[in-house]
Length: 367
Ligand code: BGC
Image (cartoon, rainbow, N blue to C red; front, side, top):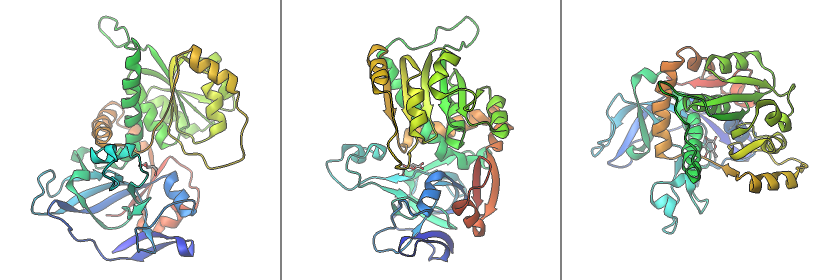
């Protein structure tokens, strides 16, 4: 079968023929891959910045944002059925007995760093025709999500973040006072960046009752998407990040999804009282930048602020993403599909992985 693979020893990205996987345990499941989303992580792996093939293998099949259909079941599978639409999680636990998160199914908080990730670190990914995984890793989707289910994995980033923000904000009376007969905006959120992670995060915030602004370089297509789901757009050319607070008033939550440290720390200075700043982006290592540490430290203490970093996502976040994606589609039926700018056959991998294509989310259509 065909697979898109990175070969680090040759510094190349290739369409290869590989053996189709077989069921490897009584609880394993064989799936036909339907779609795979392309993200910045994939492009960085293809630029040889990181990415590790499985032990003893010269290549890594990439792709971690997937949507698949169940085609074969091991004899002891009880959690999925033939024909189910599924999204597998990305990270697999490390083997260390003392890693409590991995031993309790929370490998997204692995403490040893020896976790593996499909399509990223030591496990093949989904940019191929068939894959096998244990039933425990699979999240079942309703068939109504066939057209947008590939967005589940990038949405899990926001879901994990928001589950943590809710826990953190139990430190104070944070709930909104409800007006009789309706929901009232009482929290203000700013999303930094209008890529897929930013836009899905902004949808989650709007759906959770936040008055939401998306801060990004001017871009008509993205601004239209943002406004169509009830958020506001702030053009970075017009408002410097450090002035976001002056422009918008006290900000309760900043959700960073741009991977640019200088802008992010400038925006952090605009975070309001009792606010939470969430980092989800992974910046490249560039020259050091200047940050007003006195301002940030004063604010953190005098305004009871929290700074949170979050990576990967566990089972709860996947379940929440499946539920929320249905809710988003019901609320904004034309907007959610518009996040997927284009679909391409596997053979066109090089255009998406090695070049910059304008648009929001690009998807490889395998079947
Ligand atoms: C994926 C996460 C993964 C992270 C770091 C992201 O693109 O969505 O699942 O943990 O990269 O490898």
